[in-house]
Length: 245
Length: 256
Image 1 (cartoon, each protein chain N blue to C red):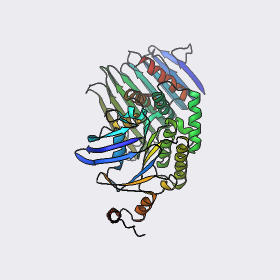
Image 2 (cartoon, one colour):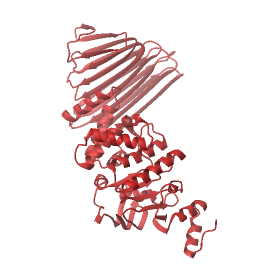
Image 3 (cartoon, rainbow over the protein chains, first blue to last red):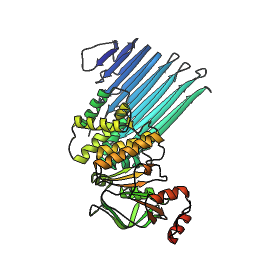
Image 4 (tube, each protein chain N blue to C red):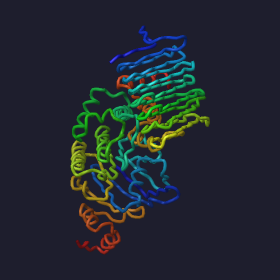
């Protein structure tokens, strides 16, 4: 298992071409990106497991591209107050699977363009977008899944949720499923609104104040859902509590 | 401990509790039975200050003070606990985070991690729950029985004084019910002054947890009060309440 840190260490992997970094993954790897230094991050995965965690606080737009030639990729993105993000995923061989957990805290207008191309049969994609809007924040999630003909037995899942803590009405979720193959399992869910009153009541009935209950739910929504190890989650929670609230 | 005086409650313009009276003293166990939709769960939710229910008349007095104006969390911190009929699943929030925050709120200070782990390990063992549940999301992927056990775990962790158990026995298998019953008894023994309000349809749990009084609720009122035998009579007679009530008024015994 490789563990690679990009951003706050001297490790340099992959090839850098102008504003793009190209990372080829041929064995099981964990990648932690703490600082967005490039305009584009390109991951090519060849029959391997990849877990990426990106903590994005930068103001610049960023572009991610993931090409999977068989393998499982878990892509976790936690962005606070960052700029627009574009994520392109290409599932290029059978048994290529992608899991995306995209957690967003928005204090200004933000746009997320996510597209998934199921180029071969037996490919899975599970996309979970979770956002919270505060102050002047608003979020747009555009999620497009493409399944062309002959890409049989694909699983396509999109799930997006935005919790509105300010009074914006600009939050928008567009689940787009373009499917040209009958033998395919596809579903999507979208939710924009406030926290469930019953959840708040349940937590408050155990003695938590409303603020504590909301903090717990925000932590749960944005960090609890990520597919990263326990210690990493604790660090992120601490960071979130320290410099965001 | 708890006194409910002439309580009337409306939900969506429907009167669900009508001048309801009930007094529960320290260390007593009361059981409420009754058909579906007569306001049993409503009573527990009102005591816990669920905002969906509007109190239009009466008062709730807890340890000599009215709690009607207090919010849900303030009531909980006074030592009122509600084990819910349908515990919610909360994705992403782990049991340990939840309980640690709850305990810190109750004790108004950050709790010691070591004593917390010791306490939760003990509670987990008593309830025969799997080790990894602590780091799992609250009730996420739990079976019906596990959810109910989790409510008892929370009770053991938070150590309330007045405990409401809303259909804690539904969806629980025989072995799990015994564990739940044993744990309630264990808690009762450790906290002799704690009082209980148990809502149930069956006598299953009452075989383990002996009630002091059994109340039958109908149309938002207590129509009959008795002891454990009343609960068995109700179970034997099905929900034929007319019969139970009429015979109770006549003063004659219900034939079995």
